[in-house]
Amino acid sequence: MSADRDLSVASWLVSAGRDRRPGSPLNVPPIPASNFILGDARAYSRDDGTPGWDALEELVAGLEGGGYAVAFASGMAGIAAIFDQLRAGSIVALPDDCYQGVAGLALGGERQGRWKVRRIGVSDTAGWIAACGEADLIWLESPSNPMLAVADVDVICKAPRKSGAILTVDNTFATPLNQRPLELGADVVVQSATKFIGGHSDLLCGVVTARELGLQHALRHARELHGATPGTLEVFLAVRGARTLALRLERAQYNAGVLAERLSGHPKVRVTRYPGLPSHATNEAARRQLKGFGTIISFDVAGGAAEADAVCSALRLVQHATSLGAVESTIERRAAIPGQEHLPASLLRLSVGIEEVEDLWRDLDQALRSI
Ligand SMILES: *Cc1c(COP(=O)(O)O)cnc(C)c1O
Image 1 (cartoon, rainbow, N blue to C red):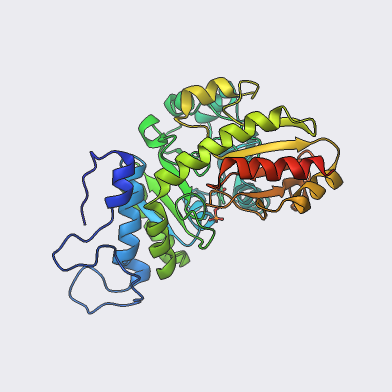
Image 2: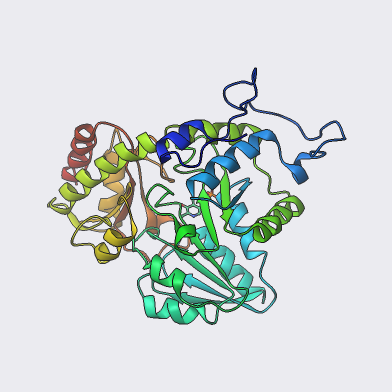
């Protein structure tokens, strides 16, 4: 498989991960194989992968701007493989706002005595620079979930690191189209392919891309021994979804910009967080770091949990569902989720899809006015 890495991102997405030999199907079909006839590179798929995994890995590695990708059963499976690289007694620097699964994994490991966790504010750049000299795993997530704080990723990636430290950026919210941390000096980038890469709420998959081959080998080894292998149908659907990522993101991001602006002026909304809004706390960092401001908005409904729940129930086009990055808009009250009670009670996280923006606005406006 080979596609031209000099292509623009949209063209890369459409053409990467193909078997170009004459007579091959245009896209690598689902290949349900645990084992292969011996004598060539592949013997057993858990160890050696399948052409379907290779297609997704080639596509995402190119998207991240180079590096070596490893596909996993989910974003969390890939994240667990990164944490698995730590020696006993390591120090993990973790944002104070990040994906709750990552926080759960890190804090659970700390309770078991595997490592120590230091929480750092997403925009506390001095804190991150100091942590780079001490921590064995520096974990950035930017924009963060669900407060959408943008870290000074460029500055933090250039700070001197403790020898052997791994600086990881969870790039799921930004996507590689808006931010390429490997080019800034990160060691590893994480995508929950469940979200924007798949884009249709129909699969679980993760892809971790390492800047260096040695780390890729270690991550593959972890995948092999943990059995954290992606599904046959899932990698096929992830590649299929990725073909339209540039188009989907462009439309959803346009919609999100319009909706964020209007929500911030709505009488039933108290606070609107969107990296592109001048009123956003880290808008300046967002303008510097991100090519686009993404498709996620979090806003606090005037009132409390009951009012926010009522908005979710009154919506018709926007789906009351978790997750994000798909063609359909989804909304959820994050403080309702176990472990997320520290968030503002009426905070709704809206993942904006590719519907017609005026239809989305009418739906949001009627739901807000109903409370
Ligand atoms: C969803 C998500 C994950 C976890 O990915 P799964 O595919 O659900 O395991 C990690 N980080 C971020 C930012 C996410 O949104």
